Image: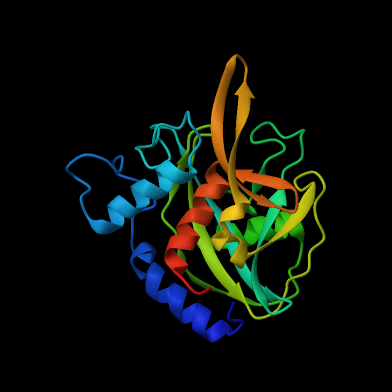
Length: 231
């Protein structure tokens, strides 16, 4: 890991430059003759590798007509000479994605940018971060069909570790994921989830005893792709 924030910012700005100008809503699934670019093929592979068995590529597909826009904050920061990403554990009482690992984020309000939404949701979930952070770009949006949101991940870098005071109604625990875990094959596995009578396979990433899967794992896969080797 390289704790130099200027190098990380430059790397991410370059990798995410195209996403800053892209549409927030996917136009079509990443399959078939319309998507034959190397970038499109790479993203489709990420979705195959990280998506749960029942998703059928819907994370990249066209959203429902009534889907809402949302944003999450993917904050990278140094801790003990390594870069980390902050994640949260959703309480079990929440109506959607209960008990799952997520990024701080939520639905956009009228007039907000994606970055403003991501920052506001951080404050609502975790309080004042205590450090300044710089937005460096956006990862490709994902359609989270289980809750009917099109989610845009906003990537930011802080030069110091943030602080937090978790809103217990929205955050049951805070997880600090070292970036090097994304290159550790031993962290990757799969498990089975049950929804009613359906049982399906879900790829996951292990961190501090938690399984990170679903849309959060997909976002981490996109981040891994953007960073490339050496981080």
